[in-house]
Image (cartoon, rainbow, N blue to C red; front, side, top):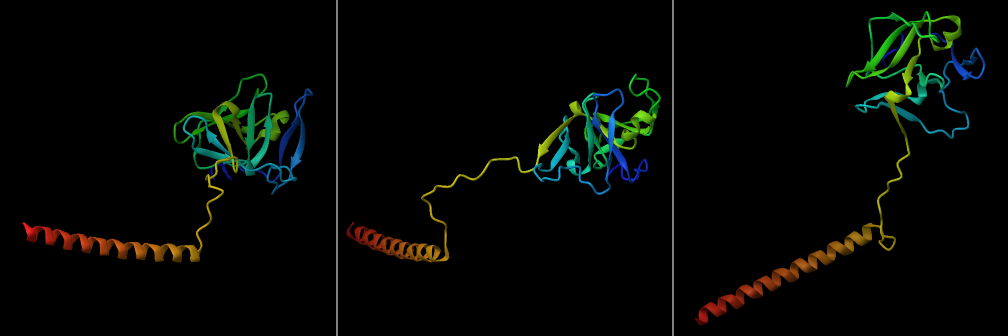
Amino acid sequence: MAGEGRYGLRNTTYTAESMTDEEPTMTEFEPGDKGMKDDGSDPPVVFQCARCRLPIGDSLSWAGSEDEQNQILLKRTTDNVVISSEPYVSRTQVELGSLVVNISCRGCSAGLGRVYTSTPKSLDYKRSLFCLDVGTVDCYILGSSNQTMLLDPEESPVTLEYREAVDFQITQIKALTLSVGQRLMEIEAQLQDKK
């Protein structure tokens, strides 16, 4: 996976719980936490590049989301994510003074978001996480497909006994066909003799 150890992911990271106050409320994200609710009701999600559909991450590396900046935060991504080698200092009001590296899709070179390598204290929870812009990412929920093969309810399954019966009938039909073919050849021969 890209990003594992790239910027020294710490054992403890933080996620934004609420963005209603001036300063975000952060909770500790335990190592080994799968980023999913413990009730098991959320199926795994695969995140894809919105342009070329290459997989770029999954919900097992979920570290949180930030509604204010319209981002999802992942601890790890796939090798389809390219991390730029050119860091720059962000000049936006919210990120002022952060050292940022852009990330893009390996398949189509579309920008996906950024990684914060150095942040002010108020953004420490985002440091070393992959911050993907929601508009650049599509997701696929595993098990969400409802398509199934349509079966006739009156159709019985093929069993060994059924197959033996069908094989016997096919053998009888072959014998009858050979017999009819042989008889036709005899009739044709008789007709040609009479001419």
